[in-house]
Length: 328
Image (cartoon, rainbow, N blue to C red; front, top):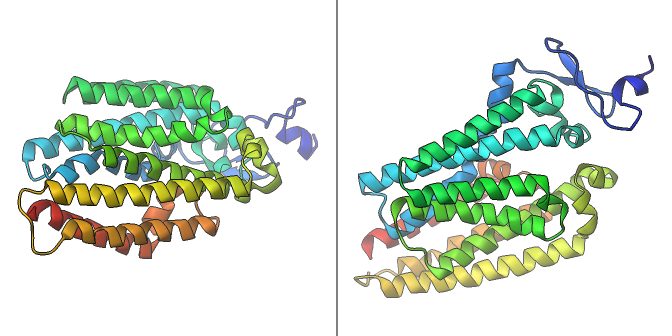
């Protein structure tokens, strides 16, 4: 049997991975991908690195200054766990659905389902279990958190099924997932969400996603549309326009939110901490924009966890803003 016939079917769809127990599995280009044992594959499929995105659930309660209350802190932590379970469940199902496309991607072909470490049926069943667990955990806090988690599950399922194929709608859908995380944190701790906070979260997510799409198109080159058909719609100039618009909206909204927080303070501190937090926030946005401009935005969690200057700027912002919260 030739290499070509061994790696694909007559319809051009990548062949199924090697049988269970084999050391390697074929990818969509005829190469070999190392397979992990099933337990390791299940852990990798949950994508623990992606859980960093769920830190957004702490944003609203942190801004409201309620995380020093043990009850609210525990509720926020439960919300974080619920969204981690929900996210991992959707990853299980999404990877099972996208197994053929993932085998065409230079990096994603190494994912557990695409490589054959986790069988497709196992991924589907595991996903359903994780999603059910997410809702059960959320209900231990309150119904509003369960609604937020449920909305996130519906949104991500719709995205995986249909929305990711529709230009612009796919961007908004992913951005909405980040907003729901922030809303979930507020629902868990029963704190109100400022209009400006909502705008910062919404456009911040859109800024990140537009950079992700541009980086994916650059990374995949001519094979980009085979991996994600909607990438053919986004030109470099359009994604650059989206980044400019969304980052501008984020910066303006954050400035207005910072001034709103300062005016609402019970006492006026000698040092304007909220206003000062604008500086590291702007620096963080500009640093992330630089990373995106270099074409390194296809995995936002890797940027956040791996870019040292961005991390230092982020720590500076957290320190300044936290002082503002607890001295106001």
